[in-house]
Image (cartoon, rainbow over all chains, first blue to last red):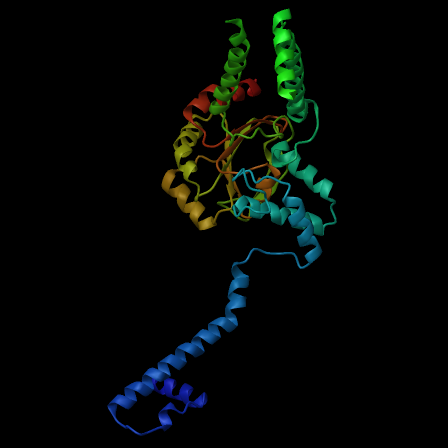
Length: 192
Length: 174
């Protein structure tokens, strides 16, 4: 009964004319009116939900810096950093809890006016070079950096060597006196 | 016949590299902190929140720091090993309760036994970042000078304990 009242009042508040028709009074109309009331109630509830949705969402969303500039810097920096949990994802892209923590850490350090380099050094000191998507150039990574070029050079040298040797093997076919005459005759024939 | 020898040699070398690669575990990222002083921390204790646990408390003795959480499945796997180790009294094990709820953590210890001399609480994983933790469980062997000497990534197995951790602990205890 309470619900009915509520639905009616919401109906009235919204100025619906459905109940005012009054051409077929009775149980059926009552139910219908109720149905309409429920529909409206639902709409009202939905509107309320939508109205408050941003607040509900804010509770769930990952914390972001108030400063959009820091957020932009954080994303730019973390796009070059590897998430150690899901190793093929960047810290910017990963949804892992670990990546979330590191984003928070980077954000906080940026708010504390640390430079990008200082932050990267901080992470490398704790997680090693593996956290970097661009490995630094040092003695242990020289082969990583230059290996492909060494292979390319070796391949090119091999190709040159191979082609030179191959040329030696293919000799000009020596023609006999008779074959030359034959060829000349054929050429003349073609002209004539 | 000799013309096939070089390609064959290259092929064999390549297969060798790939075979070794298959056996490596990409999840085992060597920690740059091994050989460096353990990060300092001062954290609430799990059992007695009014007390704190600091990294300096253990200077002068060899100890293990085990990062654990009640939500961590592999921690259950290693837990009996840690309980046994703590019973043996060879080396004290301290816990770092990582990103956990106090109630859950206490219940977990009640259920499976508490091998820890004390557990420090790191609810937001900040000390975890200092230690380079990227997964739970992880276990650090820390020497008398407070230097990290070994990091076990993943559960402490009986093999890891017998082959690596205990020999190292004995050596460090001197």
